[in-house]
Length: 176
Image 1 (spheres, helix red, strand yellow):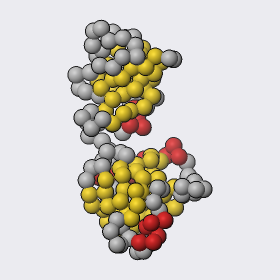
Image 2 (cartoon, rainbow, N blue to C red):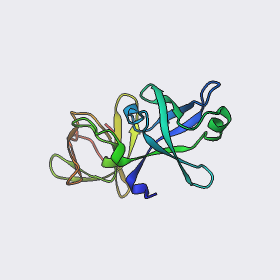
Image 3 (cartoon, helix red, strand yellow):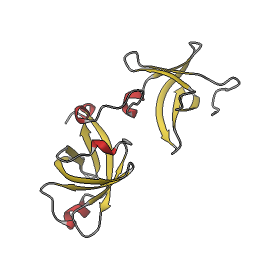
């Protein structure tokens, strides 16, 4: 399996109830990617091997869902999957709405100010609940940039550039 063609979308937290159902933490922020008959890949926590399953049924919220798998009908087997990572083929992911992006699309992009100054590279993203925060690094310098419409002016996936409107007086290693 070529990992660059797949996206880590969640982790199995454990069995749910007395059936074969699984409680899953979603990383993608979009439970719509988990739909009936969708093929998923579970990464074994000890040897990193992958097992392929199809989703039978899904229910739940945006961050945690309850999932049942086809050809899987035993709570003991469900318990054995606890801690496994869930991967999906990128080609199967739902296309995000306009001005929405998957994190994997943004990480590694160059971040620049409206004035054309390069701030660095988007290293990772922190999920805060209210809004995401982009962690931009350049050498020893680090910026924390809230992912808000007033701050993020534009994102160009083709050019690999994010343009941000820095507040006056913001200096390196400081957050807004």
